[in-house]
Image 1 (cartoon, rainbow, N blue to C red):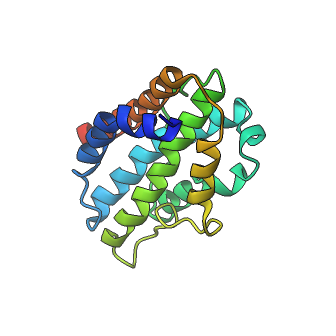
Image 2 (cartoon, one colour; image 1 turned 60 degrees about the vertical axis):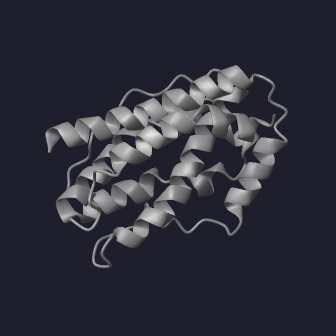
Image 3 (tube, rainbow, N blue to C red; image 1 turned 45 degrees about the vertical axis):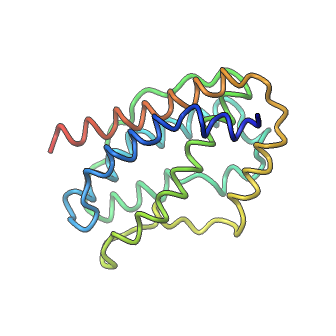
Length: 177
């Protein structure tokens, strides 16, 4: 089983839980949209910082084009919201965990493109509509498939940790509302 297939299969429950929880945000409502972005701002900067501190550019030289923290923070600022404190960074100890964390973020990016359709045109949506290089998702999946990672269990555990970070972020924003 490829790393991608293992991650998809063994994190499907986490992915479904994240989708269900984030589905509680009505993106056509400005207050819900703000909360949705704040939830992401609790998770994405933490994961991206952990990836960078762990040397993700050695595995993905195009990492700088994949980052979305600045887009997210720009959307939040345009909506007049203050910055949200990010949750603690996940521990990314090895290549398997790095690949897994990027897998979750790239999946989030793909899902974001679908969610962007629900955001009214007058609201900022740079974060959900990043203008990265064409084919970057396919390129990432090809790299993931050829990564040579044999620590499937470690990768799955890291991906689940990142999904849990998103869950916690959404719960905090939903509780505050």
